[in-house]
Length: 258
Image (cartoon, rainbow, N blue to C red; front, side, top):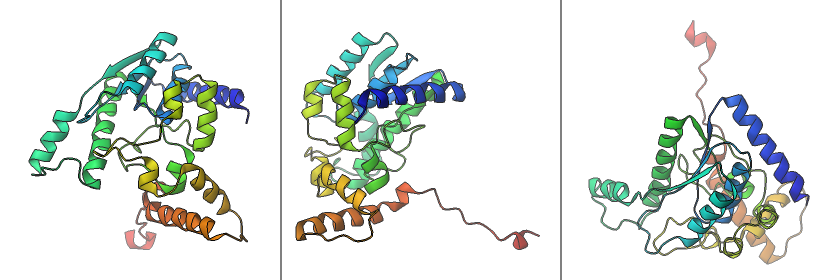
């Protein structure tokens, strides 16, 4: 894999896009995960003004990885600014309004956290005329739809959405991303029990990457274990298809409008 060329190409693509959009800079939410770390590094390399925003919600312990990556960026790139905005009060106020006491117990409230972060990113983006940058990879965004609709899926552009998790790892190594981030188990951070992505998906990213490639082949002979992985991929893909396609529009026949 030609990581240096891919990095150079993405940075060029970002610079070209922002020039065409007539925006002033970029804003990106960071979590301390490998996808947001790689993406924010690529954005920083454009030399355009860039805000990296950490948005904790009811976190029991400090997110040292997010802070460590932010420090790496601000020390390396003069165009990067780091802010931390705790959204816990906003989240608990919503829970109070809907009379929900167990604040991290449901998928709806997990998704709410992601949507509150999206609202916060777009507030600052609107104030500064910045672009909100997405951090999803190819498997998440186009394979199994592992993101929150109008949450972390609500962005202006996707720099790494044509790269699998494995490919993102190669870029992370090339970009000298903090070692602990490269080795950390992927998690969306939306659950009280800190469950990993693999816990939620039921399979690993590497297995999903394999299944995603297999869908393009007509004849496949699977072992029992491989078949289970492939079926899991199909179930997730079908279940979340609504996230990965354009919003359906009911097209009215022209003769009805006469």
